[in-house]
Amino acid sequence: MGKLEDILSHAIGTVPFYIKNKEYILNNGGGLHSYPIINRNDICGKENEFLSSRFPVNSLTHQTTSGSTGIPVKCFKSHSDATRSGRLLWKCRNWFGKVYPNDKYAIFFLRRFNTDRTINSSPCFVNGNQLNLSVLDLSPERLELYCEALEAFNPNWIFGPPSALYYLAKHIEKRKWSINIPNLKFIEVTGEYSDTEQRKYISSVFKCAVTNMYGSKEIWVIAYSCPNGHLHIVEDNVIVEFLSTENSGRNEVVITGLNNYAMPIIRYRIGDTGKFVDHHCLFPGRIIELSGGRIGQYFLYNNKTLSTSNFYMAVYDLHRKYPGTIAQFQFRQIGNADFEFMYIPGVNFQTGSLNYLEELLYNTFGNMLNITFTCTDFIPYSSSGKLSYFVDARNQQ
Image 1: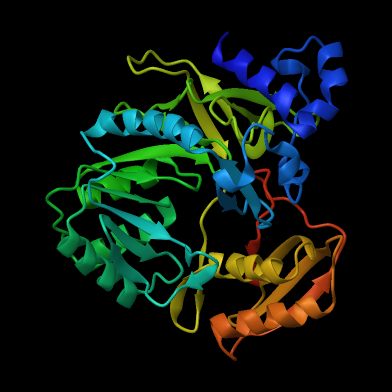
Image 2: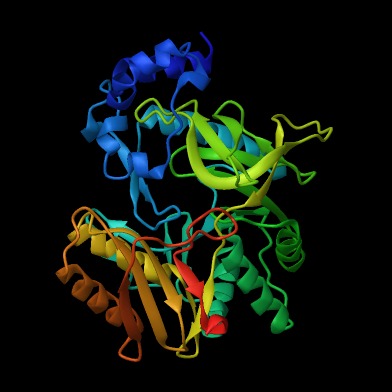
């Protein structure tokens, strides 16, 4: 039995969501295209419906993802699931130079956790073979600190969002001094849509290859760029389809994981857009070209360059205390220190939750912040096909 047939059979036999849809699936032939297409709203808050009965929940690890709405979804994996996907990713990384899991690397992070406690006391710290750099504040003083830390740590590779690495590269160029990281083999950008020119610029400043890892917390690696610059699907880990939606003019990415036995994800619409392209290339996997996805954003506030993820993390904390209180949201900057929080109430909405959110935001941004709350029943999507949780609306006034 092939990998796809195996995961489909496993899902329909052990996963509550697919068991409930078994009659529909079998009546339509039982193959991949017989399975219903799902999206984030189908999973959010109902993760247990997608867990296989063959795996005790307490034996699984999980990560959370914000996605287009900023509402976290738990993505579960068994040790064997993670090992299979991880091996495929490391194989791709070695296209650019031999690197191993124990090699030193630098990574950009939003927030770090210790069991159930959140620890944000240090924006820059070393933990074993890992140098951790916070993306929440990329002001010049912070970027100077990161440059010094990178030179002292001398990692073999760097992993992070292209927007943060672009800001770091601009800082290095502006100061007219090169950065000295002799062991650096490549930089891997991920987590955001990245165009070719952005990667070329980062490569020229750091004087190393810049690779593009297209993935998701639900599936892990979907595609990886080869030394020729083509983005190849990692066919042993994922099936990729492009769904043409009526009247949208866009081809949406739909993925099926081949190594997610603890939490099978089949025909999952992730909100990105793109297409297959024809190029002759010696590296394995069909080639895709992305035309839309999540883009990292930064904004000026109180003379600092801050990540819009500060807003998302506040809502993440809100949902830890008040689960399900907000269904969708968007922060809009309407002045230098003036913001609007537009929200669609969730099924468990509580008025007091907004007071708690306001408190969280003041703890992050200080008393200069002026925030208003607007309840709505619709928040428009961006041209990329995703709902942006931050919009600079100052030029729209």
